[in-house]
View 1 (spheres, rainbow, N blue to C red):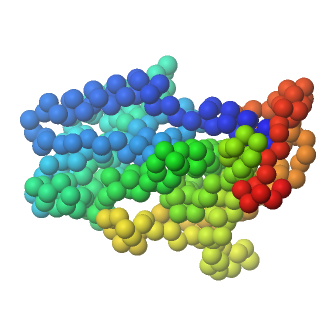
View 2: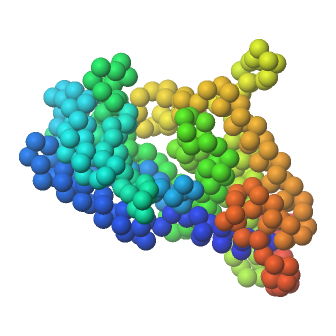
View 3: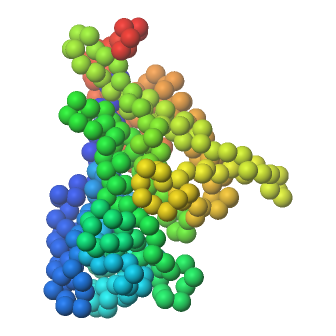
Length: 353
């Protein structure tokens, strides 16, 4: 059970600490100042979204940090075309850095350079209201790269509701420890997928999909220590159980021309939120990519089960390092033995060993 110590060390090493990334926050505030001081751009309220606001950020393997900022313009959707505000933002920021700004389908991205290479970027997402006089009215996201694309549109969105939906998992001080394990396990899976999937194209499962599956299916793994009168958490069991929950979601689609069984997951945004209906979070992944995702999840479950069966703690950590990457610590034999000697077995919550 002292294996839990190494899981927490792993979490600390991969956890994105945005308070420490003061330079990124400073750049964000400079960009917002440029936009606010321009008379051609309507007034807006900013809102941090994505992993920043959900407390689920992971240090990127490619070392390019990012922050997502929602700009809720106090205008009505009927008064603007989807690209109007995005183009204005682009024009204002296109020469701000050496890399400049780039219009992407969901946002305008400004990339910063450090030590001769791209180091971090700020994604600015444009929203408008159905009724600007009612701050609770439907928000619309400006989706598209240019005016001529058929994909360019105003898309129903609920960024505030989405963040609240995630942050309501294990809400309250009484659920603090469960909440922390939930966040750790999401970070473990995000690091695993960053290591196992290419970030180019749509090969990598979306982080928001993993996050929402966790909100809906994750359960804390803990046992009660009657001697110390507190719960002890088991992150190995928790991440294994969550991987199995993802595994259950795959459905067989067909056998392709090469005789390969093809699988997919249909997982929509929560119906309680004000998004477009029936938006599958995995819609951009091809059947081949989804089937590869299943094969890798199957392998993850098998690998984690082998870790559970292993009795040597150092060997367990070696296997976990192979699964999650070099940030997972591998102790020396003498250190592991010392920690194992200090471990006091706990009983389950039901009182059964």
